[in-house]
Every structure is written in C-alpha cells, then in structure tokens.
Figure 1 (tube, helix red, strand yellow):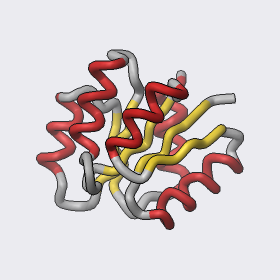
Figure 2 (figure 1 turned 120 degrees about the vertical axis):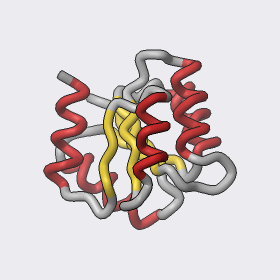
Figure 3 (figure 1 turned 45 degrees about the vertical axis):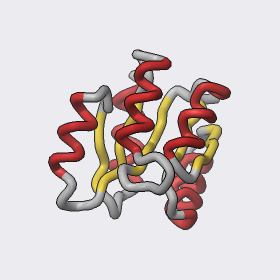
Figure 4 (figure 1 turned 90 degrees about the vertical axis):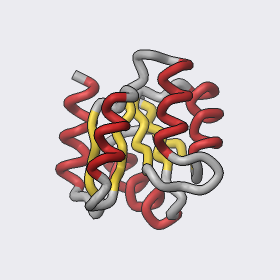
Amino acid sequence: MTKVLVVDDAEFLRVRLTKMLVTDGYEVFQAENGLKAVGTYKEIHPEIVLMDVTMPEMDGLAALKEIMEFDAKARVIMLTALGQESVVLEAVKSGAKDFIVKPFEHDRVMKAITKLLS
C-alpha cells in the first residue's frame, strides 16, 4: 500500500485529505508541522508527501529542504494558498515536485499523486 504523509497545521485539512486518500486506497500518516514531518518522513519513508507551506515550529519550505537532504528522491507536493507564487518557486527550486493551490479538489490531488507515482 502506498504511504502518504499529510502535513498541515490545520486539523480539518489533514482530516479531509486523509479521508480522501484512504478512500482511494492509500495508507495515510499525519504531521501538524514541519518538524514532525521530517521526523515522520525519516521513520516511515512515505512515497508521497503533501505539505503545507505556512506552519508553526518549522514551515514547509524548511521541512522540504531537510527531507530533500535526507532523501534526494523524495516526492513532495506543496499545498499553498493563492498569492504564494514566490514561495512555490522557492519550493520547486528546493525539490518540490508539484504544488496544489488551496482550496483543492479531489481530482487535482489525485492527478498530482498519480503523476508522481508513475
């Protein structure tokens, strides 16, 4: 079963994504900030990470960079709010494979995941 790590400080968003992914057959793990995301990534080695940009303790960009240092083949999709284009550019330069703008649709999330797994 494909493991997906969902990282967002908003619990409702983690729950929404988790329900969506579990329904589609993925094994889902959660982290509420970048610091926990890095630790969880190192522990479970998920195939995909869906990571918010703005979070307390460690933001998504810092976590992305740490994950990429640990595993250069990590597949991270950033979750961004509208108007964060400069952050998206920085994330892509730092190794993010894709980005999804919030609020997101089920089809967009699944398309991004499927593309990275193929």
